[in-house]
Image (tube, rainbow, N blue to C red; front, side, top):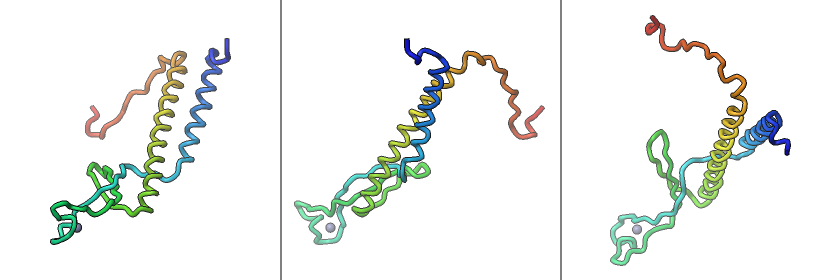
Length: 134
Ligand SMILES: [Zn+2]
């Protein structure tokens, strides 16, 4: 039998794991959402190689795409910017992965502490503007 089976020890382990995860969120650097890809483009200038019968397109260019306030935004980036965005996007994914682990660990912690106080009385909800109260 290991200590893990003792509920108090299991709870302490969950709490310390959660605290370590929560701390690690702060160690993640700058973040950016969206994704990067390389694109080739047409310039539409008459006589340009990109409009030839066997076209040679311009590029590759780095393009960043993200949803900003519900709209898809794209922006062309320099190679240096693309390198930074690559790092920031990876950081953002790390952040979300760690956050999901935090949330899972928090749910486990809640479940393990529910039993004794499961029937705690919730305060009556008193929300809504005054006009809707009866
Ligand atoms: Zn062109």
